[in-house]
Length: 367
Image 1 (tube, rainbow, N blue to C red):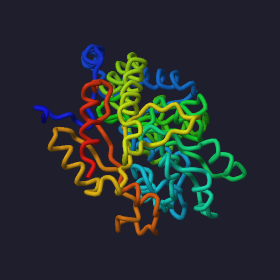
Image 2: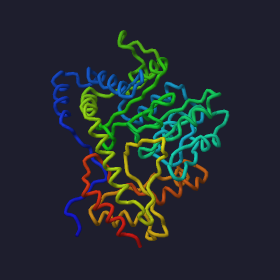
Image 3: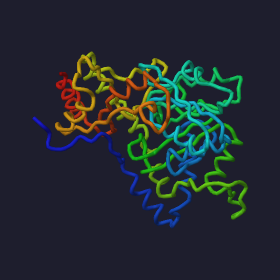
Image 4: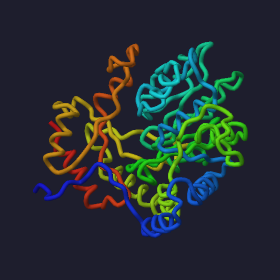
């Protein structure tokens, strides 16, 4: 029987302190910058055991800030994966740099050191390891491979907040790490982002670029031509409220992942994203690859069939080689994932019963 209401692909969840903190921020009249911004940065850095965190208006702005702090510009090349959200590639273009798209590992769907090495040149300025769907790239391998160069390693951890690789939190193993707090992310401020680093000089430049190149001690004196990438005090208040309940959020997302794996185990034609033993993931989204020999109607038809059963899903990311705007050579692995990956409903309050319904429906659509 078809459900009466839609199971959304994602939705923000609130845990009881958001309204209290927002009211406090509003009553303070600090609605642009303010104490919650500083608190959010301090608490976020603390949870990640890293000295410096600089908030931003969104995750894309966080990447833009990272590039500016690294002085990336015209003629530089930035290696990015060909499967994953393309914010890092877009910001490279806007900086006058060239995104160089690499293949990904066919089981993890993430960048590896071998993928990166094949794309390096004398113009390479940075590698962006995008931790897709909550999985993590081999950042240690990538760092070791570029260790004898000036190439920076940026972790785009927008989809992997609180995932771990070998016990280390996503975003803390590279030169810089960037995060997103958009509405579907593990914790949310509506929109919002963060950059973390262990480098004091990079932190200083990040803070300058975030706010028109000015230091607070001397207003209207511009040390460099900055931007306005600031997070508001209201958004930061929500972030602080979400961080208070982070253990509950992580526990619930792990429950959702465990339930999906249990109910999709050994289902013909459904191949979940593979997580190496070094990775302790916190999923942004539960994604599977549909094998065309079993789902002969194709992934896009499956999405329509799921929607008719009141289940919202999303396709995988499109490879840049499939989109004319990027003028990218063929990337066969990324193109295959683009055609066959399906992302299932994933959020912390998704019930076990709804997960069973999603899994049973998907399994029933084998053609």
